[in-house]
Image 1 (spheres, rainbow, N blue to C red):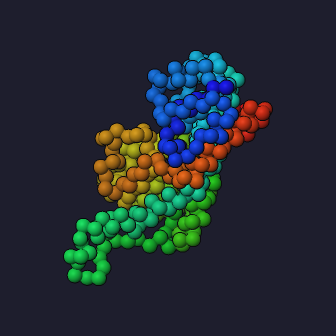
Image 2: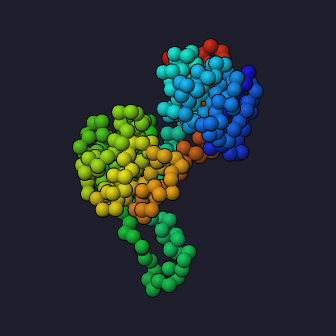
Image 3: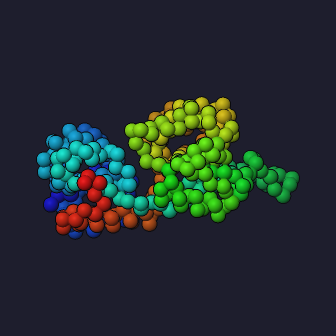
Length: 304
């Protein structure tokens, strides 16, 4: 049985093992695959594994041997699941593997915007502390999180974990699905919902105008949830104090992306999910999902 993995590098750049999958079938792993390479690489494979490659109805119809598509992520909006179901192709996903990692990264972004750790580390290493006549100094005022409000949009496992950590820091929590106005008008607003056709550009000019002046937006969910041009305008004008995002609508972004040049916007390269422990979980669940399918099971199927 031939197993093809189209984009394995981000999960395993060489520090982990694919042995559990290799024991199931003949495994071919590609670091990354361009759209015009997919058809030839899939060929007569029965099993297809991918994280981000776009798997369309047309592609599936051109691969008649295909019986199974395993998403290597929690999000699977890159796969036409309806078409797969119609064509008798099973589709699985990796559920809730990154809850703690994404929550941790969310809080790390909030803390960086409040404590400016990187800014002050750079300053000290440039000699600013050596040259300072006082025992301490700060380049930007620090912000105490205790007593600040946090609006959470998307209250699944990650949203709840973020709330737990934020409460421990003394923050006041407002969940958008329960208190939409209070959530939008919080000091910090953080996104933790999936991207759908209905909520694309959910954070747009109208949403931002409802936010508290000087608020902070955090996005560790999906880039398409945010109208990035509108966010850039709000950051430039000072309508929002800052933003921190781990995701963008286009990844990798263009060199002229409107957020990249802004000093009050922190951008990390979609890495919240990547602690070694999380990637090890992906490798294990990929093999478990496929083994279940081959034995007639339905573990983590999304096409049923």
